[in-house]
Length: 180
Image 1 (tube, rainbow, N blue to C red):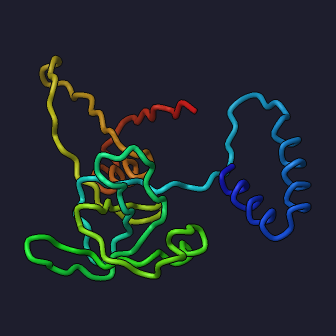
Image 2: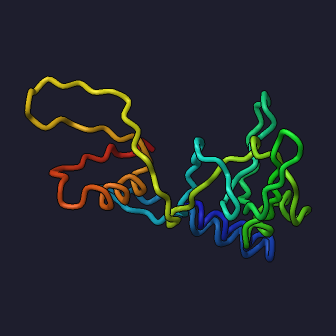
Image 3: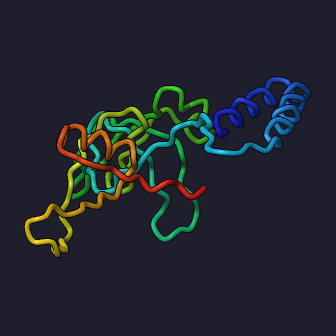
């Protein structure tokens, strides 16, 4: 629904009356009750990769000021250069193509320099990432029997990683459904 909401906001900006009419019609459609498993198109979100150090070419978000309770800017930026500034490193970033229209803050500034510590690497839905699995413990109660493995992660990226590392060797996969 977020994609539809974005399009309605754009329509309201161009023509307020048409935007209001479209929103009223969409609300009427959404009130219909549906039963059974439903799939709704959605705008895929970006997944943050907190333990990854930003490099040139990475998509990043600028974190809010440390200690503040404000939400961060959702704009995606691209790291163009990393410059050493004494003991710290600065990243020269610019808005991702198309992000200038989406964010008021990004439209004010074409590019800026930010401390590397204030950036978090982001992977969008179809971006290639190379996840690493980290062993955090083991409970072995079955002797020679195979054990269960729990992988915490974003479903799409975990499944892609498993098809790369364990193709043909996984018997069953249970994906915990989202609780929306």
